[in-house]
Amino acid sequence: MASIIAVTSTTQIAKVAHLAQTIWTDHYTPIIGALQVDYMLEKYQSEMAINDQIKEGYQYYLIKTDVGHAGYFAFNLHKGFLFLSKFYVLKNMRGNGLGKLALSFIESKAMELHLPKIRLTVNKHNSKSISAYEKMGFANVDSIVQDIGNGYVMDDYVLEKNIA
Image 1: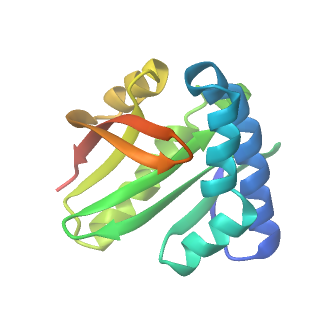
Image 2: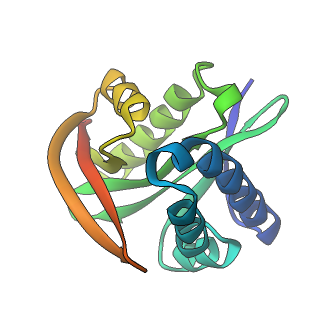
């Protein structure tokens, strides 16, 4: 049985950062390379970065199963949509319905907040994730390139799912 747990403590933030290190290194190194993965982990998924994001209004959640923490997600609110900033599940835990469970939780939060859609960005070369998002009802609505510093960019699609 899986559950969704709000991240509120430094111990939980450390767990998210550890999950990020594991998931990102495995999943993104073949897509964007080890140097960019290391840069992005430090900039966006270190304990300090996560703590700062929570202070800025991001809501982080852990996905916990009977065998331990399996992933995490984070979102923040924008005018007219909920922005799903992070959505990651350990490789060996994928395909067990955890993504669907998390998305159902996220959709409920968006509905509670009267936000009619969920938006996210995904690397254009991350074909497995794009396919998974499409199966969950997301559609590609835009393409963006964002400079993230240190000579790196995020070359992403913008996906949306209408929930209202």
